Image (cartoon, rainbow, N blue to C red; front, side, top):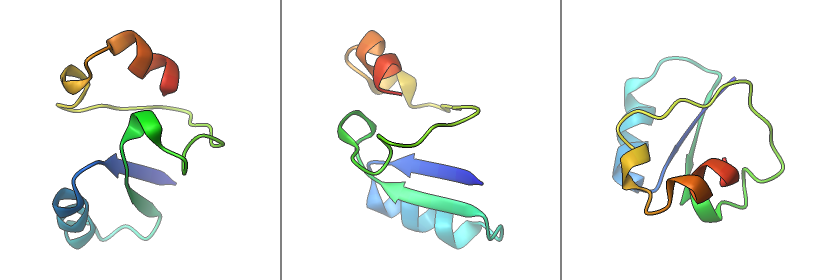
Length: 64
């Protein structure tokens, strides 16, 4: 399963419309204060053009 996370609802809606894969889940939340992801674990985390947005990279990595 793949989980996409973005704070922008418009981008989540665009991604949903563009994907044809049934196992892709999208969550619209701030990754640093997410309640939907805190109990999950992932094999891989990929960030494309987002990591630079975090004020504290160290805190962001710990939260992920």
